[in-house]
Length: 322
Image (cartoon, rainbow, N blue to C red; front, side, top):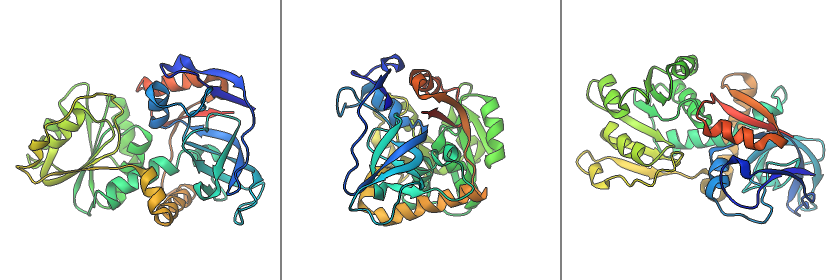
């Protein structure tokens, strides 16, 4: 099969399009003919500086396609089914082997391209807002990187839960588009201090919850943006900024920061997370939640696709199509 591989971490041009052996089907898993790959923030981070499981390495957390092979220990999947899957690595290829428990049947009416964008972004946003963020109707939430996959999901979920939604983005054009998805107040991080803007928008009070996928100095600003007893759901370090906030700044306002990793929650509380993601797939199929696709690239152009994600110009998800 063809795959986008690399032998050393680094910039997008480390990718090579090569022929590699087909993956073996695990006893408790399936092999999927991949039709769409959603490039996740973690994929970009791993390509830049993550650990290699092998050389050559195939990166990638999430893909959608059709089951071509089923392991002997699997009783609830069959060949020909359309599924979306998550994995530790391996999505940037024509085929992927995954545990059956890490797949979801794609509902009728939902195309595989949009399905490929659902599990990690919507599952992460849901946990940030509700399971760990404890968002309540009437509260105010600030979503960083609102034009990304997690950001777009969080804006929609927070708005329908009755929250007032603020979000950051790098341009006024992106912020204008986000209004369609429920954004109440946009903050252009290239022109204003977001923490000061958030406090001004809330009349000096601050926000109840921040979804922070950026980290570093942005995380320090998120602490400043919080109201008394405010919470931060810290879910990523997209900025790749090693700056460490002053955690003593949490104490005067009885503020809290919770680190969130969907993969750990999926492993430990599998049934809850699996059901939650299946619900979101069905909602996207019905049109009550929206997936936004920015651009699609052939698998052989993985370098260009990753460069598009890193440019911060994308609005929504960037896909690879094998």
